[in-house]
Image 1: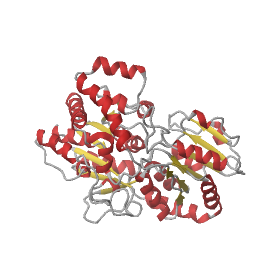
Image 2: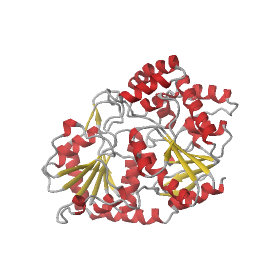
Image 3: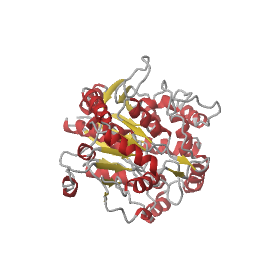
Image 4: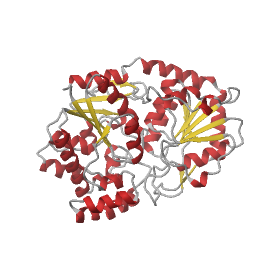
Length: 443
C-alpha cells in the first residue's frame, strides 16, 4: 500500500475535484491510502461525501481565500495564525489585488496565477511553506497534483515524486487559453516572486508558471482531437476523468420529467467567488440570462448549482425551472437533451462523454477556450458574455441569442450526432483506471 496526497488549486468550485476523485477512488480500490487537501466549502463537502480524508492546511488564511467567509473561519484565522502580522497584511492586500487585477481575459496559467496573487511573494511563500509542512506530517509516497503550482513546488522541495494531471491548455508548449489570438508582450507574471522562492529552496528557476505543472509524469485529460498539443510535448493522454458516486441517483422528480418536452440541464457554476465583491469569473450572469431566455419556452430546465446557493434575485424561478443544489453529473447529462453551462472543462467533457450537445456561456477565457473546442468538433455552440467595463466584473448576456441557439441545437440533430461521435472516441481511452496504473508505476 502507498500513500498519495491529492492537491488542487484551492478554489471554491468543483471542476478540479470531479477530475481528481475518480482517480483517487480507483487507487483506493487498489488498496492505497488517499488524502486530499482543499479547505474550500464546496470541495470539502464533495470530498467528505466521497469518503476521503481532507487535510486542512494549518494556515487558516487559506480557508478564507478559498471561499469560507463564515465567522468561524475568521475566528480560526485570528486564533491560529502563527504569523498574524503577515497574514493580516495578506487578508487586506490580496482581495485588493484581486479586485484591481482581475479580468476575464486571462491569457494562460502564468497570467492567471499572477491575478490570483501568486505574484505577491509573501503570499506565494506562505502557500508553499504551509503545503511543505502538510507533506512533512502526512508523509505521502507521492503527490498527485491538479493545477496547484504551490503544491508542485512543495512536492519538489520535499523530494516527493510528483504526478500532474492537467488540461492541454495548461502545458508550457500550448498556446494558453486564448489560442486564437496573439498575446500582448507585457503581460504581468508571477515568475520573479516564484523564482525567489525556488532559489531559497535550491530548486531550478522557471521562465513561466506552466513549467511547474510538468511532473515526473504528466497526464493530460481528453484526447488530441479535443485537446491538442505539439508532438514534442512529453505527456500521456488519459481521456475523460468524470466523477459520479456508484450509489448516486437522480432525484425522483428528475426521473419523472416529461419525455414529451426537451430536458435542459443548466449548470452555471459558482455564482460569486469573492464575498462582497464581483469577480470576472462569477457565473451568476449565466443563470440570469437563461431564466430570461427560457422562461416562456416549451422546455423543462433543471438548474443545479454545485452545492452553492442560488442567487436570491433569481427567485422565484419560472414554472418550467426546478432547482437542485447538486445532481450527479453523468446521470443528469444522459437524461438531458441539452446542457447549458459556464464552460468548465469538466462540464464540457461530461457532455461529450454522454453524447449530449452543449450551449456554453463562458465566463472567462479558459472557459471560452473550452467552449471553442466543443464548437470546433460540432458538438455545441457558445454565447459570449459582454463586459460592461474593462475589468470584466460586470457582464451581461443577450437572452435572445441564448434562446435562438438553444432552439437551433435542439432542432439540428448534427450537434447530438457529433457529440456522440466524440464521446465514443473519448471512451476508448483508459480514463481513471489507466491514470491510476500510470501513477502506481511512478512510485
